[in-house]
Image (cartoon, rainbow, N blue to C red; front, side, top):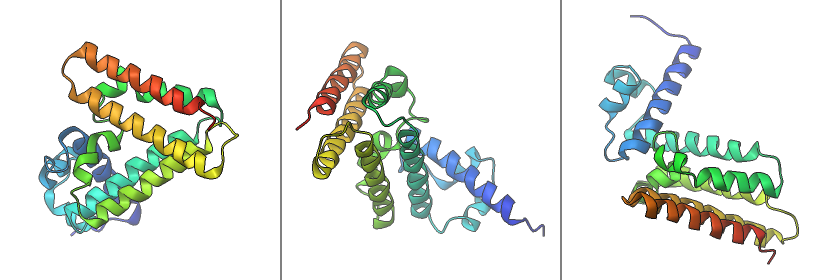
Length: 194
């Protein structure tokens, strides 16, 4: 029996998480079985339990990974209003709307996460809070700390729900209008100093 080193095990775990991230966002949590994820990662089903205790454990790890990547991308932005506006416009773009597998995990999985066990919901809660805090840190100065967090939460909510709605609508013109309206509303919140 071959023994693999720590590096190989970490790389295999990373492959599983990345494959699961794409599959979960494309097919949903309920529509993504362990066998399909492992096939996407080009691994056998038996390798799964060397890395994760259950499907819920995998989903929690994927959610943590995906939200940390999103937080880091916001964190890498210059801390100014124009950068945040560019992020808003990119998030509510037709390209992002049409990129389910590479797009926002919240927009893709939120309705299912609410029905998951505490492990997944806790992982999501922690990641979502870190994103909201990162958005707050990038808001223009002049608001109280409480107002910064409320504004950031409002922006995050508008972005996610606008993207979800735009993805659900089959009429391309109406879907585009939802994105445009989301951008308009997000920028109004961004520019409101209250």
